[in-house]
Length: 198
Image (cartoon, rainbow, N blue to C red; front, side):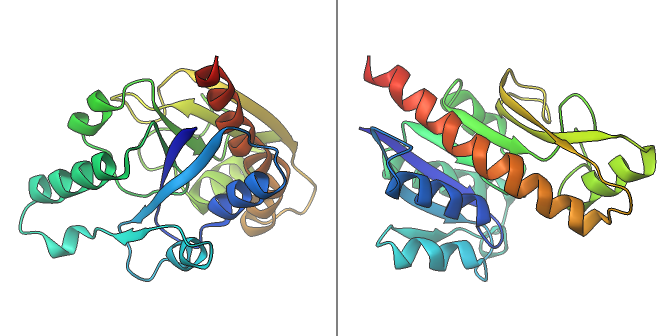
């Protein structure tokens, strides 16, 4: 059974998509062992608690240095027994020490078709604002392995989503979530779990 630890910062809609996919048996041979957030107010923590999943908040504000925060985060990941770390709307920059430890075992979901609209500064609504500003007709989402760069790791899955006339960043964000993110992330976890099961 693949142990998955999910890192989140906000509402946890991607986490919910994973939980639902596990319930529907669309993800086989995997379980969520912990949910960790840097934000004490993240609704994602409540989603985890409702499912009886250990939910931890490790906020950088509680530590004197960034290094101390990184050490606490790494300890929590180790304690969770994570075989796979999933960044699902996690707004913390993951330090190299953690990336090294989980090389090839950490994935991220990004709300564009990488290499478009990615890298430093491209997160949340900003991605969709830039896509609309550029006038693209197709956007989407990408699941990729995490490496030392920002959105530069090997791509695992991508799904295209059409941009409609009159889309606002908020409307486009919602469509990308519903049509791509919530589909891709569970599929990626299932793929990795099946690979590990062999």
